[in-house]
Image (cartoon, rainbow, N blue to C red; front, top):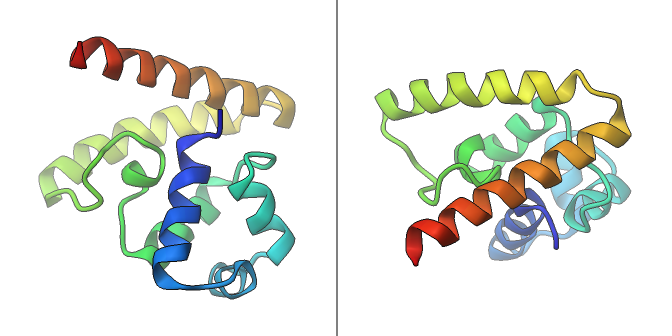
Length: 119
């Protein structure tokens, strides 16, 4: 199962009709890095995730699956962003192999809670 971040970046890139190389140039990463992010093999840093959100004009919360709405109002954005920053900071402090596992676990938990809520 691909991380929601990978899925959303690929979907947004295709909506814009950009190649992986074009997207990479816009966020200052290689085409190879974009490919690895889209395939779930790499997790971008906070800074790169922020650049992706700016280029696509969506919130980082949307990219990370914490919101289904790509645009939050300013007050919601502040609250969610602060919570998101705390979680991201904790995960980013882990070694790379553990970081990927943490994101996968978080994604599985969020998916579980969403499914539970919808049933």
